[in-house]
Amino acid sequence: MSEAFLHYLWQFQYFDKNELKTTTGDPIQIFNPGYRNAHAGPDFSNARIKIADVEWVGSAEIHIHASGWMDHKHDRDASYENVVLHVVWKNDREIRRRDGSPLPTLELGQRVDRKLFIDYQKLVNSPESVPCAPYLPAVKEITKLAMVDKVMMSRLEAKSKRVFDILQKNHNDWQETCYQLLARNFGFKVNADPFQQLAQLLPYKVLRKHGDKLLHLEALLFGQAGFLEENADDEQYQLLKREYNLLRQKYQLSDRRLNKAQWKFLRLRPANFPTIRLAQLAALIYERPMLFSMMLETETYKAFVALFSIEQSSYWIHHYRFFKNSKEPVSCIGEASISNIIINTVVPLLVAYGKSKDDQRYIDRAIVILQQTPGENNAIITQWKSLGLKSKSAFDSQALIELQNNYCSKRRCLDCNIGISLINSRQQ
Image 1 (spheres, rainbow, N blue to C red):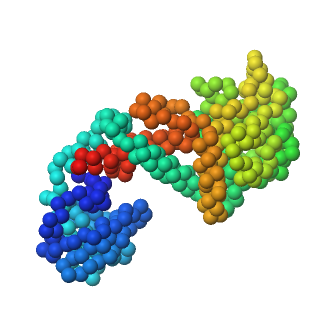
Image 2 (image 1 turned 30 degrees about the vertical axis):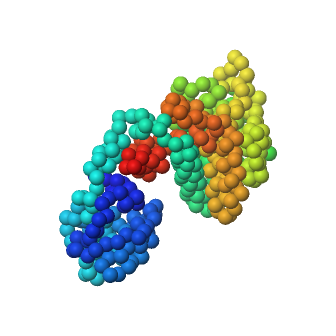
Image 3 (image 1 turned 45 degrees about the vertical axis):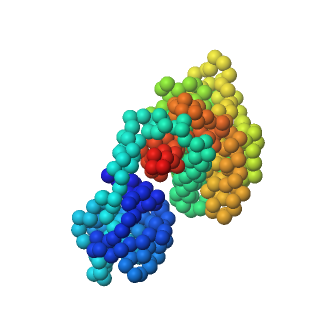
């Protein structure tokens, strides 16, 4: 038994409602079970219930055992004072309110069809990566699309919350926040952490003071990243090192740099080496000094591709690491990488900015840009494709990733439109 299943039973009223009574014998009439509460506090709000001769409007709280009320310390929480009905699977103890009066309790254990619970158990205990995979073809297309929209909005909400967390640490500085998110994104999956640390150690306000000199930007980034610690004959290396030594003294950066060993090169294609990504980040800051403002004004996927399509300095067109020439020219940042930046940096920033300014236009634009951006191609997307859910854009692929990671993998079938529709269909 799980509370998620009890929430489902209560929400859809899937139990025997004949002669409903509290555990103390008072008759119950349920006019409205209320609405699921996704925040702190009782599980269902605005329930409308008649107990004995009194009609109540308030909250309903769900527990497997009545003693859960005490285990969760609801007896000490004033926000639970408006609970009008305690719904439990088993009433293992009497619960009283803070004023000493008994809390009306409804026990469901003997009122639920055993087959319903068995069907639920089959679904959540399925060995499949997607629990409903065998039954998915029978689900209506509109139900699948509704779930895709739902999880996509949940994903945008979660990503925008992370933006707000960083923004708060940056004292509401949007440019600094944009820079830190972008830097982490330039590390992609393998070097995301050291890129993020670098951005935190080397503020954007320092880089901005040297935005008109690409050599200075490279010196600061490579120096703080720990790549300028050696003695070598390479002319460009010596030039960067000399500039960095001057700048680190000016900004007192000497004790705050990364170690070269923190950066990962193993099993990466040369175009993805952190040295190349650092050079591209320097070039982007140089070419687009007002990047955040430009992002707010850019409206289409193609325009964003043009915005991020920059070429690193000549040295890094012919080198993929210091002291090592490349046999062929190193390409500039590609469209696949730009799509990744749009998905993981641009869109969350636009959504968060729209929320902060209470301007729906930025959120709508973020969604449109996602719909224009090519979908990702990975194991999760391949799996969904085999089940008949194709990814036409990044909006779809991001939604399917969210569905897999935060619903299917966690067996949250009763929070999923698809899972609910399957269980409901067996009750008809």
